[in-house]
Figure 1 (tube, rainbow, N blue to C red):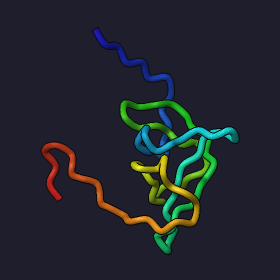
Figure 2: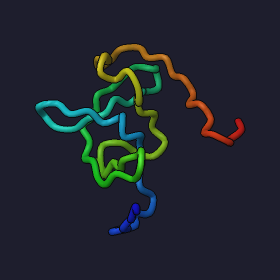
Figure 3: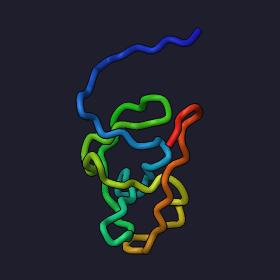
Figure 4: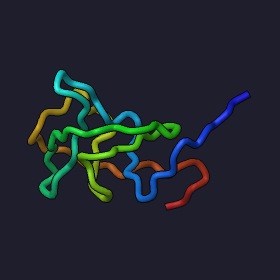
Length: 93
């Protein structure tokens, strides 16, 4: 039996895939893609996990593009290729 307990509802929460945040000696961070398609390392404060997503309490704003795969090989200021996410099962583009 699985039980889910809702401790708090956070309106307008910023959620990213749980694979996006990484940990360094300085704490958690994500890579954000800037307007020139270059990576920017951004320190973040992570919150609760919701399934396969995690709340970002600070460090990333809604609408910013966050790197979700191959981020272990990424370095700051490197050119990245943006690939749209695959549609979810049953979802149409």
